[in-house]
Structure formats: structure tokens, C-alpha cells
Image (cartoon, rainbow, N blue to C red; front, side, top):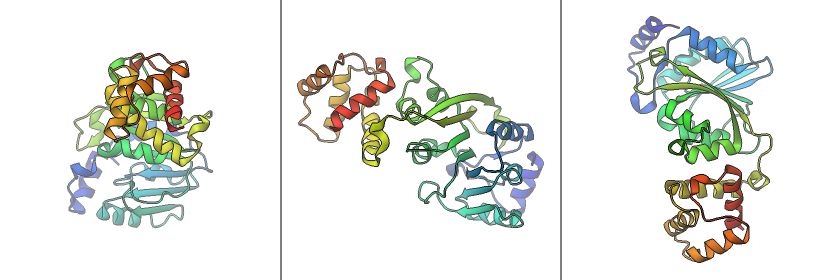
Length: 278
């Protein structure tokens, strides 16, 4: 499926790309091949594809895997895909919102993620016990925060959360003109695999939820000392019994210094979160 094919299909469907849905359609066959080769797929793989669009990836996967669940929010595209892939028994097109639907069982996610909701998708799909592998096209600025570089400016909430549950393996620049319409952001193809040594604290849904909220609450203050960062978070959620002196006492008792938040390792942040959950 090239640029001309995409334009013809969109015209036939009387469909204009919707910016709020992050609709940028893949037109470069070389990039499709790169995504497929990076995926290292087998006949036993069950694939989740998020936002398949016109099926550029789907058509390259369908004869190589056991099953594809393609979740498409746009009803026009969903109907089109259902017709195109009706001859295949191993493709199921699901017309629904990825953030609302109950996910079918799968072991790999291969997708050009909708850029407007990348963070919520990552949280729903990967931040859990036994997550799938992911081969994803995402915004480059997000990808750079996922691959820890030691750069203070790129250390963020997603740096901690994704590296807690997953191991980033590789990244590959994708030209903007590989899509129609051409996005205004730079893109990366990334591969992430499950962290084989997930901290036991995160094995329960309740503790995972607390951890994700805790990280989201303290990371806006990554340039502050950790006592201040945690204090601001608990004030925001009105847990006023955690005063600064009590926070310092809890941290000191466990051997943590009151240094800048960005100086802490991810494993240390998980353990600090566990202290306050307790």
C-alpha cells in the first residue's frame, strides 16, 4: 500500500484523516518490512494491532501469525477492514476504543500508535503482570524518554513507569513522509519486551495503581529534593498526615538521603513508593 493507494481508498470511502484520532496512514512498504522484521513473528503469535487504519500492517501480518485482533475506533475504517479481510479466519476487526475495550488475549502488540493517546495506551497494555512484547511506532520525544540516557531533561514519568514493566531493546528513526498525511512530529520504531524481574511489590493490581499514581504525582517535581516532591504529592491528594518531617523520617530510617528526585534510580523509587504504601 503506497501513497497513491492510500489516497484512492480514502477518496472512495469519502474519508478525510481525523487529526483528533491520530490518523496518519502508513504508505512506505520499506517501513512495513522493517516493522515486520523487527517483530520476529511466528505462526504461534497472537497479535494485537491498535489503530490498523487501512490495514498496511495487517495485510503483511495475516499470513504469518496465528491470530490478529485489530482494534479500530473509526466505524468507516472498521467496516472497510472487515470487508477487506473477510476471507481470512484469523483476523478479527473490533470497532471500539482501545482505552475502553476489554483486551483479547495476545502476546505481541504491533502497531503505529495513535500519537494523541500514546501514554494511556502504554499504561493499559503494558503496565501489568506478564505484559506482551511491543513493536511500536511512537512520537520520537516519548521514545527518547523511554530509552534512559542520563539526560535530566528526558527523565520523566514515562521513563520510570515503562522501564519498570518493560525493557526497551531498540529504536529506529522513521521518516515523517512514510505516512499520509505527513505528521508534524518526528517518529521512532521501538521494540520493548517484558521485564523478567518485575518487583514483587507490583504483582498486585492495587499496588500497581498506587505506584502509577505516586510516580505521576512526584515527577512534576523531579528537580526538587525527594522530601519536597513527595510532600507536594500528598498535599495534592489531601493526605496531610504526611508532613515533611514524617516523610524525612520514613526515608532516613530506610537509608535514603534527601537528594534531588532525578538522582534516584528506578528501583529506589519503587521501594520508596512501597514504604509509603505500607
